[in-house]
Image 1 (cartoon, rainbow, N blue to C red):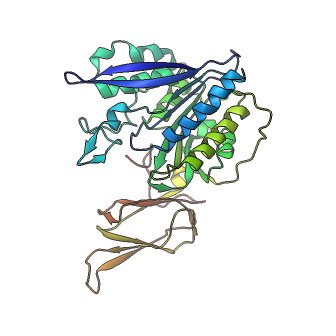
Image 2: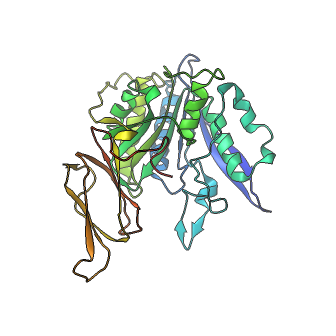
Length: 353
């Protein structure tokens, strides 16, 4: 295993950021190359724990000469966000200086312009230097996995329709509860990678990308950071890497994905109609029917008419739930994966900012 550091100079005197990168060299040039990163949203740590245990497995595999394809791993992809706390609470999703989401505004380029990402980095602020160098590494691979988590959540993935159903092997290997099929219309990290592949030839869009994969994995909720869970997820990624012939392990048997795979148009984003205290009646993993009571919002405590109810607009699987119990008006409460499109129009791109 080779370990290197990318040094990112800060935007103020005396500051620099160090980004450790782990590389495992494969012995088959024809095998797929893999890039995996975690904690791009620096407060989302299940992926960091997963990669800690996966690296242990990979070191053993390297000693046994059973790694076929090159594997690059960045266990903590955002040292800038990891250093940003506000009143004692780690931030990590939004840069405190620019207010930018760390997982938005990645450059949308053609693959042939990959090296331009790191040309003249001194022209850019630290957050953009970070994004460009992460993206440059990822575009050198065939399989790109960006490990995130939600708030309170099942395990699911955002997978561009250009990779489905080929990517069902990943969903099966990790025993995911659901797959959300995205439209590839945002500047999030994994969609910027797939954009470069789709437009490898400028002006000519490819709608299918065989042998490629760029995906966001949502590894349950922020608090789901436990040794047994991380080890099980590391085993899941091991199964996937074996299925894609990146690692040789004859003891691994293929499995089938049994969960729902629905387009983003079929996701009901349940939002609070008013601000107040949330009393949830349903939780993640439950299947609800149309009209089921999901939550009560106490808007004026103590008053006879001081609460309102939120009901399910259609039947579906509760995939996520917010952990906050005091919410603002129009705050996200739940994501429900449904078999039919939502009646609420959705703009192209991600479900959330």
